[in-house]
Image (cartoon, rainbow, N blue to C red; front, side, top):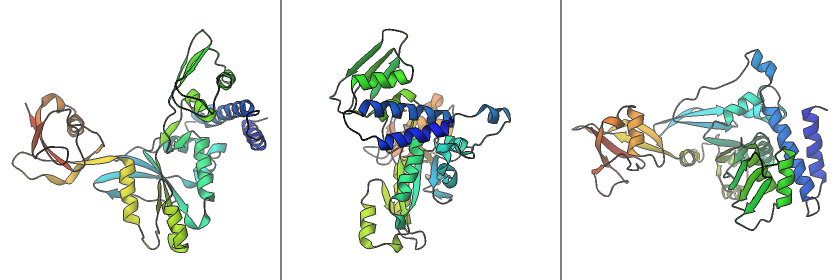
Length: 334
């Protein structure tokens, strides 16, 4: 039986098994096996690597967005944002069809996923795409489970938790570890995690990224349905055909990317508002220096900053000063 057939059989058995206290260990083992087989599917085949086949997209711009829905490129607030259009290939990626494995590897490098959905088709598209992404180790709008896990050479399995666990037990943790041929390890749960989340920690190659669900064609549904979709978490409603709410979509994308515009100023001149330096939120003056030139930080004496990050403008600051959106900076060298 091939890997695809094994995955199909396990998925069917999971669907048939009713979740209760008596079946939780059985379901945990099935999920562990399923994760192992899916990981094998995504591993590059030896035949492909020997022929030199592959797929990659050179990373460019200030941020990368994986777009599921329709192709688009654009420049916004002075930031070059690279959009990867990955619809059809993702649909078969979980089964290893076509070049899905390679393309998924590119999608995993994105900073944000925009999931374009047809508002007239309810939640069908969303659930299908979420399942595909989940199958290849992409976790949407989730944080990494707060579980300490460290394999050891001996001593058996040491299990502890700092919170009350309602989804996992010590026995289930041991069964899952044994499925992965791990018999010596330290495990510490710092939050109430599920068996799936514990498996994610064991596998270790999961990607946690923000996802913005964009419902298009709202001009074809009722106002009540528009209101319902708009109130869903991490969601934006738009109409490309009628150009409705597109500005708000761009604002939300900017927030999800967590980017900051910094403008530079030379002594005795006006700030240059035509060419912003794009950095992540929380960036310091030192990050600005490195973006301008790699040797600038070593020649740094102080900087003058105008903007919301200062108590007064201009304020003399050092390398550790945290910059904020649309601050202006003038760097003085030694």
